[in-house]
Image 1 (tube, helix red, strand yellow):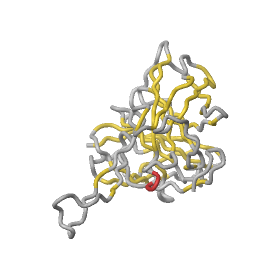
Image 2 (tube, helix red, strand yellow):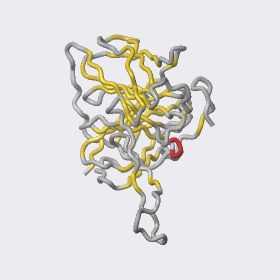
Image 3 (cartoon, helix red, strand yellow):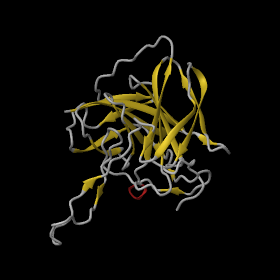
Image 4 (spheres, helix red, strand yellow):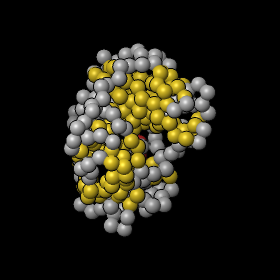
Length: 279
């Protein structure tokens, strides 16, 4: 069921095993029999490519900047339009995890993560204020589910991105080493398998626990995870699949990934971060 983006009925977001790069969550699709293939031979599944926020366009969908920051400060305005394959502004978006559009921000050093929710005005411009405490190269990622999008059946959104630069001195943050725990406000989030390295192209269940925390629903899920490949900045956004904070994932590339986990407890939203290595 779809409706106008400001007032749509929430639809379930289908979580599948996902690859943490370029939003490459591989969804198996059944292809028609090819020429010369026996009718008794089952069709071979084939991965469907998905967007990763490293481009402002994907399969005809576009993210067009209206106002991007050029200086640091509090509540700096950001605005953009989302266009469909026909070039018209998207009027209908599915509500996914309580919002029609999720906007993420990260700096080139994979620090400064923010998860925001822009509002739309009468001119189909999406706007939201962001806080920028330091200079550097940043990227915005808009995640949304258009009407008619072929990934809607499996819950895979379109993710588009825009880069911008804030001039001035910049204190780049080194990538933290892998750790078995991360402090999030008054809580400590623990990775169940410690600092174990993960394996490329192997389905993985990333499990976390938060001793002493009673988790509350946040944006329609128990918890949220935004994962960035350090080398490319490719993004995928995941949601917890069980009460123990388990995320199904598959890493297609070797290298380092930075994971940001958001959850709500005691009436407040908290954020934890982990670095993982894929070998």
